[in-house]
Amino acid sequence: MEKNVGGYDRTARLVLGPILGTISLAALAGYVSLGFGPLSTGIVAALFGLVAVVLIVTGATQQCVLNRVLGLDTYRPERSTESEETVQSRKSV
Image (cartoon, rainbow, N blue to C red):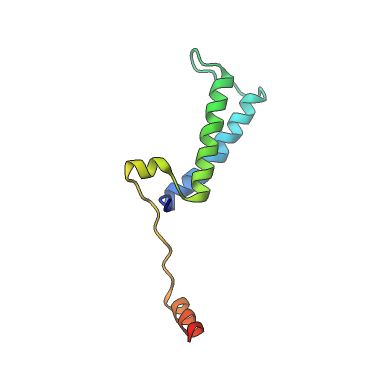
């Protein structure tokens, strides 16, 4: 699968993932309560943990199945600078 996560999308995933993971662990340890209506804290904490793992993995690998299904692509390959191209062409000669 090709890379389709980059830029601010990747940064947001790599920032929000660990935050949600920390909240999830804090809820499971009993430090915070995440109960929403009929859902218990354990269920919500597990969902937060699952979302955290997905965000971290998709941010790290820069590949997201949901982005692919929706036709979204925020990945932009880095362009090499002119000096890098010159060095590479000199090495190949």
